[in-house]
Length: 354
Image 1: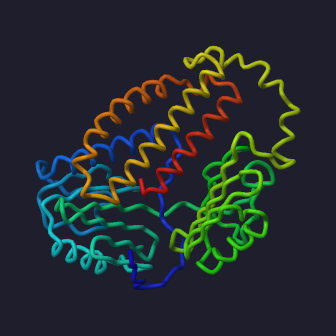
Image 2: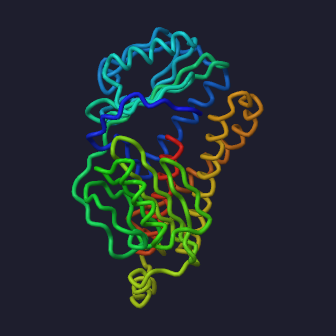
């Protein structure tokens, strides 16, 4: 897809909602699955009641009475508009630009992506064969001064030059952060630094992303997300060699020797608990793969309906097991693993724009 930049006034951190807890992940997935069903069925049966509060007030009302609003608060707005034409989509894009969404704007025949001056991020998708438009608006991330970790997964990569950002997840096996005050040139320099630091195995690089492993199998992905914001993600596999900082905690094993709280959890102990979390993560990855295919191949929606029905059945089973977990009853080790898995799932959802 060929994007045409239409403005480079990048002064503030990029807007992107963080979803780091179980409840948020479940709600987001459920909403997007429901939206998928609506498109598979052709849509147009619901009346679009445009909100008069929340982030919806920052956008023009579409010229259609068919559709639905799935999320509308001060952090996120998401809506589907049915019975929409290419001409209406182009007109709506122009109206959004008139309302201030012109920073780092990227336009195509079926997509529009831009920021407002204060960092709100708008994404529009148009599906010609479905006569449908998706609207997603997200508030800016609240960033502050961060200290790059000296232990855990984050310590395996160089510290960025900027100390402004937000660290969403920081553990021995997973790290996810947004770094502000980082333009495209600073992103490229950071990618070079990561490569020099050993993250150059099986690398893949583009103008706005860099991904690679190191010799120990640790995976890194860095992305320039727009609006002077960079995303940094580090995944440490279970069998990877850890840094000296992350290997030291193995000498302090008393917590693992006495997982009394975990013994009382509904998952039946650490072994069963990890199996539950692993199964949940595997399913969520499959869900994300499904949604990526769905978004990139709208001509195959009918054929995907059967897969969707099977996925929803498995989704309900997975949610029942996850909902049964009492976080307060987990041991320190199990709680740490729970946090890692939920962080990875949240990051994957963010990667596909959900």
